[in-house]
Image (cartoon, one colour):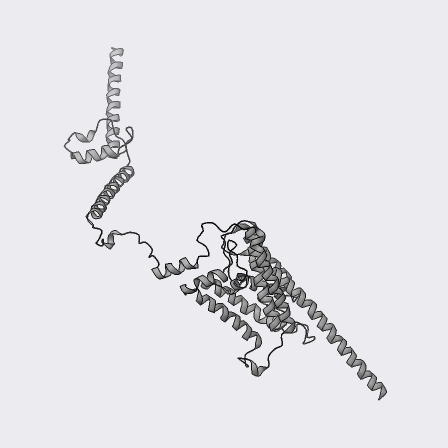
Amino acid sequence: MDEQGRAEHYAETEAKKTTKAEKETIRRAQRLRLYKSDEEPEEASSPGRKTISGRRKRQRQEISHDPIYGDSVLDRTRKANEARHRKQQELEEAAAAAASASTSPGTLSNPSNTSISTPREPSAWVQKWTKRAQLSDAPEPPSLTPTQRIGPSLLFFVLLLSGSLLYTTTYTPPPRSSRLFPNTPTALATIGALISTNLLFFLAWRLPPLWPLLNRYFVLCPGAPVPLALLGNVFSHQTVAHFALNMVMLTLLGTRLHEQIGRAPFLALYVTAGAAGGLASLTFYTLTRNLVTTSLGASGAVAGVLAAVCLLDASPLQVGGGDRDGGDKGARKGWLEGMVPLPGVLLLVVMMAADVVGLRTRRQPVDHVAHLGGYAAGIMGAWLLNRNFREEAIARGGKRESKIAKKDQREREG
């Protein structure tokens, strides 16, 4: 028996089986599109398969990038979509170029070819008043020292403060028959007059011929400071949200504060706090060389009212103000109880801290410096009012004690 021949025959048989199994495996992988050989098998025509057209061959050659494993169906689909998208873009660009070349300057183009509409320019009338409202045509603010920018406004604030104090001491309430609305409470009439004044200037901003006047005396700008703007900006609003927020806060807080301290002290505190906020804003932005910042609104005045409300009552704030302890009916009432579950001093600290944080972050276009200036004026006003209340209470107590002493003396004599 030839053992060597038998071994060679067995090796040849196993090699043929291995080659056949390998070819079968490759054929199945190609049929499942998991393998692609270097030579394109699809080019040869076989009885059980269709020949691939030249266009399809070129597409596969364009999108194929892996010579070993070939591309998956997802890769080929993505490549085909990208090629189709590029072709579509080329066609659109060619059509747009042809349309622009065929359109004469005196004709209107098809609106469907315009993807983004340009904003409409203001009319010539509005442009004229916009130009007239500019405080200066120079590209840079005038060269002034900080003293020259702040000094006139500071002098105006001192005069305004002196006038407010004089008004507080000399004001006499008119008789009911002389009032314009005799049946309306005094606090409501005062708040209504302030809201009407703010509304008047809010509507004035809608009239371009008034822009030069409003831009000069009702907007505070460190680049071109005007002393009268300290008072004018307190009554000036340009947006509905700004106007509505300040007037709502003025109604909620101002009515109760007015009932507590009276008309003259309330108006003096309101105007002085607003001007103090404007002066603080002017000083801060002048010293920080931020001369193009503009400020307007009653936020500083409302902040002063809030500070006075918080400090005129050391107990938690309440609305309606009944005598919680059932004591003297003439005692000062609480504020906003039920709405703000915080003591007045703590609420004021929280509000001021929020403005300090906002000033450091500057995420919103809010004049936090004006708020802080208004709070400072409100704190000073509350201190003066508290001292006045104490003096009046001592005076009332002395008169009551003298009346009791006289009554006791008459009883002893009788």
